[in-house]
Length: 612
Image 1: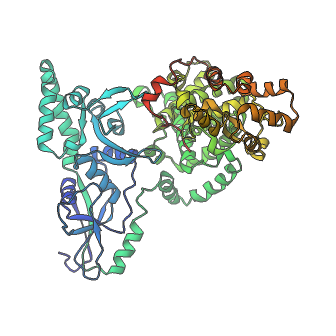
Image 2: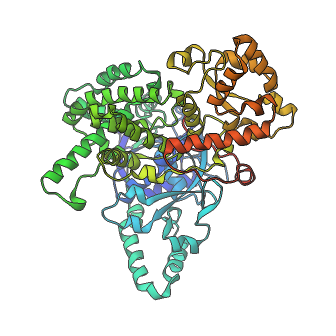
């Protein structure tokens, strides 16, 4: 009942809302965009509810007004048996409600997206020990698992299996889709308690704590609800929808901080616009985002807080963390922003020059845009010291370990915050950073590097240019001017058309071993010709002697004899080994040699970690 008003504010249990969604009582107006939340958004939302944090109000519109006849559709994941008409339409909250319905009540994997916006299906679990650790971050306890409940490594080998209740119980991974499933939850509880009869009392205590501290938070969670009644005019409904709906994505941390600083009459957006224009003068920084900038400031500001606390005698868990997570960026004060904004801007420019020294000149060639965050942090902190040769060598080694170890492809805020102080400490005589210790590369990975989707693919391309590979025509080293003027790009050495005509394995043909940095004009000469033919054309075009052409080919770690003989396999095997040596030199550690074809053919094409 509207009681003469057009809307009402109340609270409704999360369980009741999700049940109404499942029954089709609550649906979406057909003009709503599709569900767009990615895996990290879903985990963050589940973590918020698990600690009873507010997730914002939901706005519903009552159906039945003959003047407002919107066609409707069920929330994504709902399967209705008939053509039931909804009682309410969701005006605001589609993303939150869809995520919660799919994760908690649908009983099927959530259809979400990964960090590259690729469709994936995920189950969501709660790691019980992490969740019950009072000093931990609850978001770290929410784990997303592939549809088959198995986690695999890059070889497609199963390294963690949660495909049965017994395996879930053994790993203490509670499936969140059982939160509102009493029968399923009871069955899981009994298997968990009886898994080890000798520790049943301890397990019962853990289970009781899990129910009280987490499960019941979901079951008792109350969602603020704004109901617009059916007598609300159509114009008002449309206006409200336009004002509250922002295209299905949450506000960015930059937008939220902009609103916060506005209370102090500071225009953050205008300030960032000026800084961003300065950064965009460097093509390698074209993809930098406002949130990247704020992450660097958060790392440096929180590290300063930690150092100050240590001077005051604070120890252990009471010390402030070094962090750049969303919730911690929102804690930045205006004074902290003003303290670090100029140095960090200069740090980004230093990072651009560092990338130029590593022969990366364009944003599309960056293996990871995100790795700029810790790089800028350490360059800002080190100041002039970062210009010393020994210091730059260590930073370069850390950088290439991150690239070839493919360590920055997902949610990496924890690694960012760890990298900066650890690399600085290493430069000052401390231990090697964990990122360098974690970095591993296997020779078979070369066989699967075929597109720019891979960080290591782009990294190896840059590494060849860095190691003074020469232009095929002019014989000069590739500089930033030549890079753009001659349109240097990654091209085949044995052309695709030639490989097809000779029935050469196209996976070998298209992998990075058969590619190098070649100017557009040279690539036109190469065409689809046999190497022996196009080498003759290059010699005549550029007036190059055989000995000089050999030098140029060797600068690309290409065997001149194999190329002139059109011997693909000899060329391939020799170049594979030479590329491995280059990677070892850059990482400062050995590469594991293994079969480059037999094993990886069974693993499939692995292109998971790069950024466009």
